[in-house]
Length: 266
Image 1 (cartoon, rainbow, N blue to C red):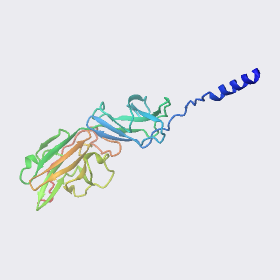
Image 2: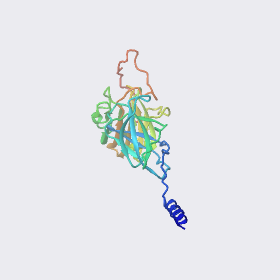
Image 3: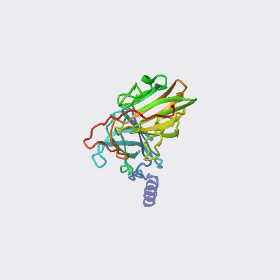
Image 4: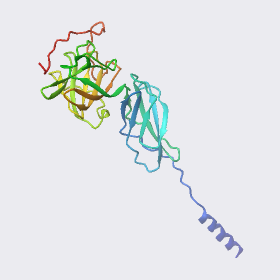
């Protein structure tokens, strides 16, 4: 009887023991990463991981695609803003996911990059027929000036009840259509520039400008009247973007040009 009792006690002790599962499986690498250039900042978003035990994400940054990536920060949602980014300086980003057991995924396969750029809001241009010295905009100096100035990139025209953005013959412009905000258009197009060097200025539309000295800018119209147009803008200070590279003079100089082209208001 004593032996049987010991067997029963041992069996009960074994049955009461708890089994512990150690999770060593890391989450999958985050996907769908998108980078949006802001003014001295870059906004990163991605798809939330499907694993239910994901605790957060680490954001990694490098100055080269194949360079050394360092941890920039951690978040528990699928969004991060790099407020340390500098205008005109390109940075490359990747994201990893980690779970509550400390397992961390590989770096995301779709690494992204962005180059922050300055921006402005509520800029006003007058009709060049009535106020020519307040009708042009120079993105390189963020200033309003004469529409015929050698460095003017864009100017406004009101003619017979219709409103236009005009550019000179060595600059391009394109209407990208309606957008909810200035940030919706993230990249310059590769084709589709207006052959007339003019586009109709429509509230809510965003326009991309390819300047004569190989920079890209965008403006979004907030309001337009017969007197003036009000818009928000962003300008890329880094020249010669590899997606769209404009040929410069052989010596790399900024060649000025005469201002003689007539537009709709003749």
